[in-house]
Structures are given as structure tokens and as C-alpha cells.
Length: 118
Image (cartoon, rainbow, N blue to C red; front, side, top):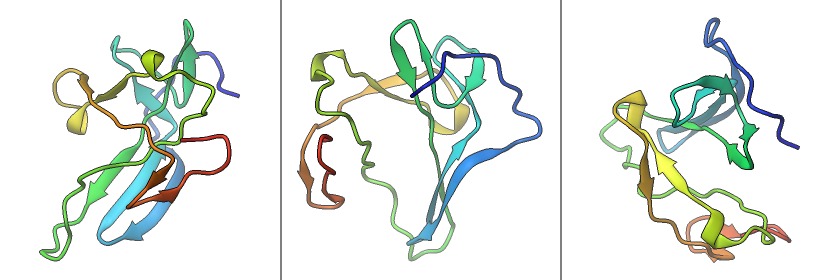
């Protein structure tokens, strides 16, 4: 269960989880996040019925590393698509920007979603 958003300190920097590099790309989930209203809060968290989850992607400089063309985020099947918003903020620069998303059960890159998710 996601807890209510509460203030968080980014120092010392801490990750909740970190996936080992694959193909030159590493994914981490920091313990603190900046949400669209500008506050720094725990990650993940819930505010006024909206949940916020932040992940960071690092891409190494090797010429063999391909850029990130898509990411997969598991969503409970019971959550209606019309209330889901996906936003991105590249490297903390600028404002959050809404991005289009596709909700599918069996992705050609990521495979079949677990039972109850898309």
C-alpha cells in the first residue's frame, strides 16, 4: 500500500531499489522524488487520490548502448485508463510533460503481464 505524501530529504541520497545494468541501462527508484507541484516527498506516495512513483534511468556512454525507446509500468487491471496520467521530466530539467501511453497485456519487448495487471 502506498503511504500519504510526506516531505523527504534528498540528502543523503538513497535508493529504494536498483536493478543491475542490462545493455548499458540501469534503473533505480530513489527514496525521495519531486512531484509535479514541486514538493520533494517520499517515493512512492499518495496525494489526494493520486499516486506518484518515480524511477531513474541511467544510460552509459558505450557506443553499443541503444537509447531507451519505451518503458513498462505495471498497472492494476481494475484501474480505469481514463484516470491514468503518465508524465515525464528528463533529468530534472523543465516541467513535467504528459506523454501518451499504451495499455497492453502482452508486450513484444516486456512479455506477458502478471495476472491482474496490464
